[in-house]
Length: 444
Image 1: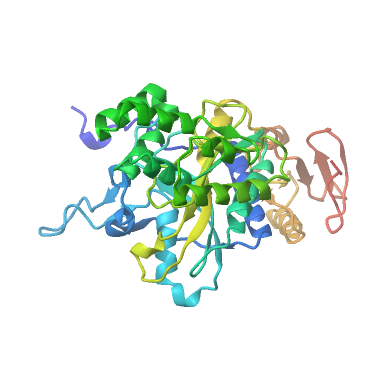
Image 2 (image 1 turned 180 degrees about the vertical axis):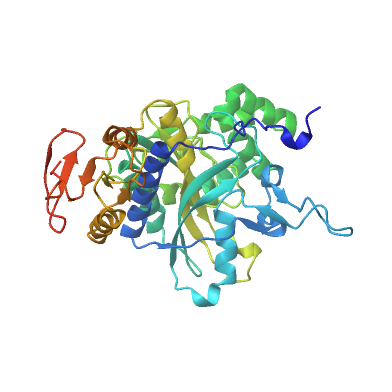
């Protein structure tokens, strides 16, 4: 019988975790760089927090997040060690950012404008648009005391600008204000407002009947009241006219009125965007309890049944769980991996070469390895991405290698049989003499 150590483990993908071939990864990196450049064009600074946080930090804001957290522990834990562990992988970037701001408060300049592009982990059932490991790209503005309402408009405008730079098709942003929901529900004398909002936030998943049944069955809300909540969620306008529709319910509540005024301001500030790009949508609630004002959810117009691809909002006391300072903020998160994986699946991502190499220096009979290295080094010093072919194989084999990897140019160094350097354009098939110090690729 064969020894267990001789057994071969058959590799297989891990559900909910993405892994791309080199040519797809190159596109992914270009998209991430495009987002980074866009964030920085608005003056946002990059931070990176550890992949792990203390579990106390991650659960400090409540909600259902603890159900999706991956806790960490050593397989070879010593006797007496805490088997449950005290660390966990972060499930989003907002909570780590809040901890970061509280911890580094004395060293930051406010308003603190940060962007963060990192992987996150959630222990949920993998399905289309829902992964266990994924990139998020976040922007947030945090300030002392108050955050200008102008940022509530600038943040979604930024997000739409960022996404417009990627070949993903149109995105529609749905905006609401939690104060509208809270004030409306308070005006209806609903006792558990937070619980009711959480159920209402599932409208796109469980439908109208599911929301009504949930409110009636779980929270003992009268059916007529639950129906009013659903009617409110049905209000959607692409301008500030939503306010009149909400006021038509006749509910007198100070918080509701404040929310209507804030959202009206944001919608008017975004009126310069193409009509229909931004929608005031009373069904948007956001499940996290820390949102206190404006909330956002963005959808791919070409895939209306696909989950939200960007989301966020205003939080007045997120940092309050980690500091006595009042540090409100507003931000939005782009679900990069969700967008990218969907478009790869749909064949909408234009895949290019398998490597970043621009020029391959061939290794031909009669050329010394030193001469080949000099050519490669000189081209690199001029700013080209260059690789050498390291084996003295046939020219046919070397050209096949360059062709399969999508390398656009092959350089043939001068040698005893060839006085001048030559370069071949792999796209056109043309080959011509070239000067090492002055050659430039053909204009595209």
